[in-house]
Image (cartoon, rainbow, N blue to C red; front, top):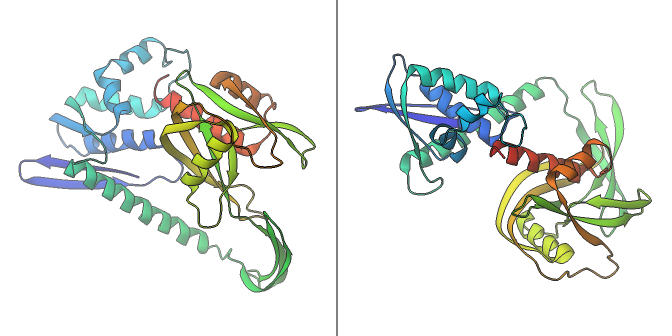
Length: 316
């Protein structure tokens, strides 16, 4: 979601919007673009944003350097969101803009109201998408179900359901409480991994630290607990990156991915019967292992790709 407030004298205009598949950085740029596009004539603009990514690109000559370098950053990688940067540059030629960085989620009433407008836009957008999906009459209605297995980690249920054409089928669903996955990144952009034997795959696999959420447990609490137990690490900075269904065709398991930074090393506290090794890889090496199929664990692949996107958005 994005939002902008335009102020001129005693006049005020609020605009906002929603995109289904995007990033925080793109929404930060979109807010500035739509705010500037709403101006009917060339103006002198004081533009306030809580996005260091946006403001620094103009005040610290990032954009000039990127353009001179063929839209590549200092590491030689393609700059993210080139389409939006180019649109902003076009608008910056029309208006005289002074850029101001404000602290997010603090005491700036306009910034906080923009957050509120953006959240409302997300809610409205999601409802609209849900209505669009439902109009396809895709919902399956549960007629009855039975428990096939109750285990320590999973429960297996069989559901008898009615389809949109009134035909009946059965679905076997694995119920799982979900888990948390941690991208623990050092100041030198190295990521911590664990290697352990996975019987289902019948081999040792390289994975991000992760673990099962206990009943009633908050996903972030789980992430902090699992990082400490598996690696001995503790982190001062935490950021949620995503939550996703691992395999919605037959399971309701949801994994929550967190970025952990400002790390402090300590001792592992492994559970009984848990054997694993800890290692570090540079983000570049980890990306290569994903690309060439050397890392096969889905949650780990996604976590690495999201970490790479974050560094790219920072211009690193």
